[in-house]
Length: 162
Image (tube, rainbow, N blue to C red; front, side):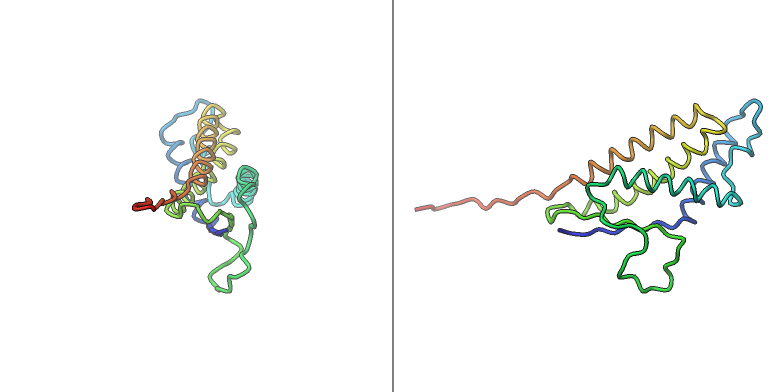
């Protein structure tokens, strides 16, 4: 079995969520709601952390067949690691296609972002929230598909058998 570890900095995820909510607010003039109210600002750190925790929990539930540990990895002694990161280790069979690991990392990151956007926008723009909920579902489907990718068995042909 192989273990693949993925790290996500909360600051990076918050930045992406801020960028997307800013774009949504600018591109959509919502009646009765100021566009600024749709933006998940950096000052909303407590709300962001709650939404992030919910997203991480839901993703771990979806990946329960693979997830082995979360939080701070046991072998990390690096001072650059802090509590502002989320770690997940996935236990994979030896036949797992390791070329899929970067794509899995990207899909998990996008799932975190889309889940947070879905829950945040539910308060301001429910129809928009449904779109991001569908994006999240698609991310989970893509993650599970990529995790099921295996390297093909190479069979040696038997020539000149007696």
